[in-house]
Image 1 (cartoon, rainbow over the protein chains, first blue to last red):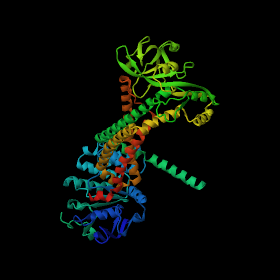
Image 2 (image 1 turned 45 degrees about the horizontal axis):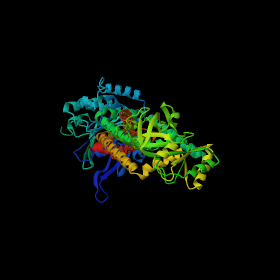
Image 3 (image 1 turned 90 degrees about the vertical axis):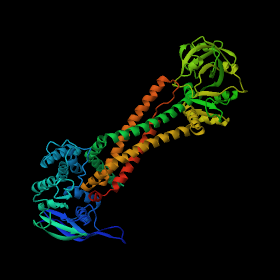
Length: 235
Length: 401
């Protein structure tokens, strides 16, 4: 399987030199194309920190992260920002949609950041809203949509620039069980393809079944990494 | 040299292209701003209010300064000769007669005439007393005469003749028509003509003005040993001015062009009276009020969108793009507020002038420029607060929640 992401010996600590709080302790992992990788674990286990490090948002103290054959932490600030814009899509836990913009404008933001013209960006955003099942709702502001619909807008925003790697942070935390499952099911069946990898950080056991592989973290370390098996974790 | 010029040109070119590429982000920034109607209006009202007050204050000051030099402008002489201690046109120090002869003898002087500036106590027919400025024009040339709007300038040679200036203070003399008699310093006076001035104002202190001949003014009004207030003159050529100034200086007196004399008077009111300080303080207070309202509201607007800006950073917005967005937003509200503020204060000044003839405020380029720079400061300060905050937020904070 072709690898999109490789991380070696990642160490991340917070605090000062004399009082280090280790969030990640020599973590190594890989993610492959056409794979949904779940990172699970209790609160404080370091999964969000790991997500931030591998997506080029938080610099590790030690270790290397290779995404699409490029060592992302060797890039300068602007280069890394541009790399994220072109290769990584983010779906945040609270969506972080601008309430004063329409859904289509929210979705168009990554394209606008890529300096694509306004009209073309909006046209493409409307197309992606249709893909996520929100055709005809492009003119509505996010606050007029349900939680599940807002999540779909956030997904459309993450995929509109056609990134190879999509990162989800607790995607079902603000949704009821059924809507959460529907969303992840949609993600797996519609967004995953030969040239894409999806990494989801969650501790919602109800959606584990959608994972191709699960990394279980505890105390800043990977406790277990394996392909999903039905009886792997209690739901 | 050529290399660095090429490099600079390349940088400018790339910046322009980058800004052109920012059009979409500016549109997003504008929508974020305008769609938050409450905050948008609050910031604009704040800036408008500040600009209104600032422009009102500076226009008032400009009007006061303009009024303070209006007598000089109204006379229209190109040069004035005076005692070096003169600070304002109204407080003239009498000159000995030989100064006039001396000035006339200077090469480059086309003609020079005496002019009298003084005050007289006018007793009106109603029994009311009113202080008036008396301007005595040279009997032969009438150099410095006003524009006659009713009657004839030649009537000034009739006995006891005075020309009343029909300005904002004309009503203080009970708006006398031609033929009205009165007493000035116990001498008889008759209004023989009505005049207007070249500038909208005839003085700073709200005193009516009467014109008469130099000889009558100096005979009828209480005199010191010397009676001549100023020598006014026109040079033959502009290039003669420095020579005339030097020659008058040799005699111990001061020759100033009309512009220089006006500047001297304005400087007196700005720096030697409390007027400049008081109006400056009021302008500063207006600026602080606007700065606080606009700065605080814009800061609240940024705070409200802070997490979204963090999300934008995570998605791929560069720091400079976020800075441009905030600068753009602050500029938009500031310039809209500037426009409204100037419009409002100009309308108010125009309206006040219609209702109150003595109202001196005037909007000029200086007051507009001062308000503009203050608005730039407000925009800069407001965006600085927001930019500091936005630059500090890390995308990781968004993940951490």
